[in-house]
Image (cartoon, rainbow, N blue to C red; front, top):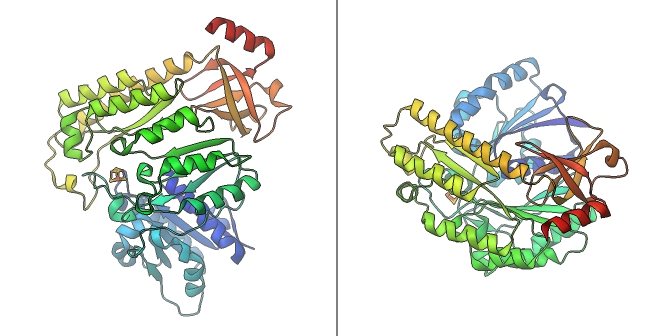
Length: 452
Ligand code: SF4
């Protein structure tokens, strides 16, 4: 056996691509290892959505160079969005890299490896979009799926939000046929998976070219025996249809959690971001979702310091965060992405002002998360056990339907195992997690009488 070390930057889509690469390499005798020193093949799977691509590459380039100098036989690869965007620079500045593959080309990895292992071979570089097909034909490849698995159902995006690099590095939107996805999920369930998270850059428009839809996928997946939970990400509020909201009323396996990126609380800024919804429309979607599912939790993304953002715009962002009461806020400082239209705009706000705004938003969102979690104490929540807690392996950890990690008291953990769905009486809370004990008949009766 040989070792492959994969370092992943970025989003869940990239994590899923890394798992896929490991699975593609397994038949060639490559086993995933934890350290590059133990590997014969090192792959850097990159993301350029939020930080400058060059910075990321520079951060790893020196390490890669040292490794290759010590072990010239080591094969090095750069894959993902940075490979797509920076292939010329990689070839020029990192000539010791053997393989460069864009996100649409990672399935060629076994072939690329075979090529570069030949004597006197040249680097293998492929960063082509699959421009012809508007349908994506693939299979989920996972070596040892756990209780919960990511399933990519589409890639690319047809929107051109003014700050976003995704359409430039992942191409136009392409969806998989529903039947292919269902076949994958059935196979995963047969391997012990209880929860799937469907992934797409703008998953709300899944299937649009084939006359299929996300809600149709949910109904089909819901019928799969043995599958207990369905999650999905990421949504565009402007593409969120009533049929999808209705799923939260009709499909109990669909988790009570919705990541709905709003990006800004100011209509003026949303317009310059080219997001094509207003804050009123966003509010209306949130309220329809809350009517469909009373206990639904929300998370969101905010970009702070977008070019032209005034204090007034930012106060509207704070007001929205307070009004919606997100369980989790992912707040990022704006950074210009090469090739996007926002990168051309004049940006007069000093960095210190942007940083101060970011810290105000983070403080508010932490307060909200703490308050929402504290309100869970005394409630009974169902959790799916994922395994021992990293900090204290004597207790098991799972997630609530609202996607909050929850630890089970060590005494109760003994009789439980990975994949169990159990009800927990929440006894304690923190910013990032909950903890509790298994709910008993008595505790359930007590909670019921209090809520009556
Ligand atoms: S919808 Fe999302 S992925 Fe598509 S361009 Fe906008 S931010 Fe990027």
